[in-house]
Image (cartoon, each protein chain N blue to C red):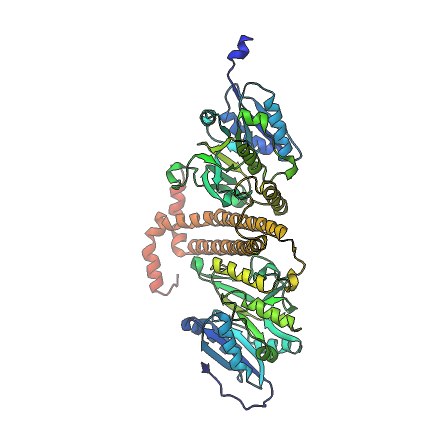
Length: 310
Length: 305
């Protein structure tokens, strides 16, 4: 573990915001999380960087254990290595959110009406977060660009766990459930623990870049298993799902129908991709393959050598 | 009368028309292309459910004692084969065949038949969005069809073009209790199979003129999905069946539903990303010096000599 600041004396005033990351890929951490933390941290902030161990919950708990002993802890900010903070006011925003002593978790994006690990299926509250993707030559889109989002702050049911700030109470009293061995749903589970303990989960207007694929979820089979395990664990205790149908036959029938409808919607969206993007890609291909474009290739190479002045 | 006894059996075409302009643009030219001189065409102005409208067409065809087949054509479906009747006749030469179509599947568990193992999909989806275009299903052209593409017996057909045998015309009806539209084709195929007749695909093709959005009204589709599953539960193997207890099925399906929704969101993002990338590259190319200085050459190449 790398501590980037000396440990303060016990009994100090709680004014220390600790940034912490569990690193699975050092190059990724160096490229994204590290410079973002540098930009957002206060001179007095401490940065904990440790090698990830076991599942996400285990790694996060190590970070909590390391920070929890600090009497001067004001907030613990967990930063996943693909998250690049761009908000110089982050510490002030976290401090403002935690000024409500009932608030235990502050997130960059979250939602209300959450009934499963698919938190984004609820009403989303999200700050100026950008998705930076590498597909199709790379680019940036607003996070959750498929829908409209509300601008924070909001009290929410759950937040996305890749960037969260925890109150000292949360860092000391709660732990991520290491029985949830799959890398999904640990954040919802933590938020449910917070709310079950009578504390609040909120979003703050935090600017950041999330370096991620356009695919919201990549490991589908694992994600489905994680969804089921969370539903089993919180069966009947998940607030947004409390009024759900308990006639299991009817619930299964409806869910199977909704699943097939959702798959069909995904196919329709895929058709839209082909229908709208393909003509443009064909037009581009025709331009690039044209005789005039090929004939002028030496000019472009020369222009590159001249620093692209023409 | 001697004339009647020598009369050739008739292949009739029927369409339930709620939007005459769509019928005139899509189904009508296809029927003209496919029909024989003696074919009868029932262009039936319609309202209400497809179940009741198709039953009215079946009743009409059943009154003829010389019916060889009734071809039910969606108003937005265009048959493209001029030798369609010959293909239909060949398929129906097996008296056990009750229904014939150009898209079908096996391993079907619900009205989402496309989630099953599709064996034939010989159609094009012709859409108007984004300037219009065609999306060809996998067996539109045999040259490019995958190894699993084949004609033959299936469990269900896509009902957009449905060829009905005389026996079925006289003995089976669409179940009007199921709703307005969705699931009519699977339910009809199940009834035909329950009656011991075969449902098969044949080598003909059609164009489906419809929007890219497959489920504009998900709630009614979901209701039909549930209704058909409940109706056939235990009556036909596979339909409405999934492994596990009802509780396990519910939790798994909810998870699979949510991942499917996430995939739909991802596709929306992919669309935005691909369009942006292409537009940017086109703008960059058009704005380049080399593209601008060669514009006169491209213009002269395009101008008529």
